[in-house]
Image (cartoon, rainbow, N blue to C red; front, side, top):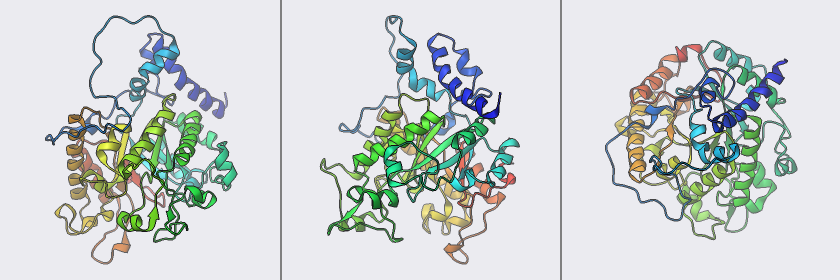
Amino acid sequence: MEGGSIGRAIRRIRLIVLVFAAAGIPAALTALNVSGGRAAAEIDSKSAHEAPSLPALAPEPSLPALAPDRPPTAGPSPAPVTASAWNGENFETIRRLRIPYAVRGVYVTGWTAGGPKMADILALIDQGLVNAVVIDVKEDRGRITYRTDVPLARTVGADRERMIPDLDGLLDALHERNVYVIARLVSFKDPLLATARPEWALRLKDGGLYRDAKGVAWIDAYQKPVWAYNADIAVELAEKGVQEIQLDYVRFPENGSVVDRLVRYANPDGRSKAEGIADYIATVRERLRPYPVFLSADVFGLVTTVADDMNIGQKWELISPRVDVISPMMYPSHYAPGSYGVPKPDLAPAAIIAAGLQDAARKDAAVRAAGYRPAAIRPWYQAFSAPWLGTGNWMPYGPAEVKSQITAGEAAGIRSYLLWDPANRYEAAYFR
């Protein structure tokens, strides 16, 4: 059988696993990995480590209902059900059996994923050093990196460049290596769509397009047609066989108080920014419910610590229960001087990671106290240097600096992580 056929067969097996489970053959869930290799049946249980309890957070009555973190009550045996009905009732459990215990992932752009540079990533995979990749599928210019069949994307020309000429073939190659594939989908930093559909963009009070300090137009995150657009892309990728959809830029623009004075939001229901973001995530999750795929969200590193939503709509206590995995972007270079008592954060990566994850544990305790299951924590770590911070405020990041972050995470009970380097240059020594 040719490689492409093998990969497509593997993706079919992932769906057949659900039918086996319905037939009462649990071995099928542990004998087969979702990508065709050995089993990966454990959740990163340490990623939801305990911490001192905080005052309970009252569940938001106006937000979509969440499954509480409690076992089902005993009752009479149910009547026989069909495989599809069983799958529907037990889908959350089935999905969680598939999350790798310790993800060691790297970010790759569409250009890398679709070009010769991907050979360097595959070499790390073949050495057993990397077991997951985060692939740009919709990047922060609004471009979709593969040929899509989503009608709106085709209409606005979002997939015109097609940096990944053969996404199916790439998925085959990764799944044959037992790689956990994460599709990065940028949500609201989408200047392409904002320009093509200005009625969905953030609009100035005088009617013009809002643009950030870099001149980039943003989508209004309250716009439900854009929720549907992003969900359509996510569903298409789930059908192609990616194991996880990762929502990035799942927020309103930074400098929120300034933006608030300039723009008029499409928010007839009067939702707060945090509620709007939570509603969006819940909408995408519901669209993905029929598919064997995880949902994750990237958040600012300080979201682990601050009490509010930073006026961008990212509030840990509302996002974490609505996703399977939450990924704080804990790049030391992105923390202000003095954060956690560290004068120059870029020079003390381990201290930043340790402090941020300790606060994340407290946030998780609050989520549990409210009766909800928090997401697994899988941080982004810095694998790039930040010379723009100025002399004396930064240092080159190599294997020692990357490994210090990984070690700090492990000390906090977090074994899964992702590495971010916009240039996609990752050394084998990072993982050894």
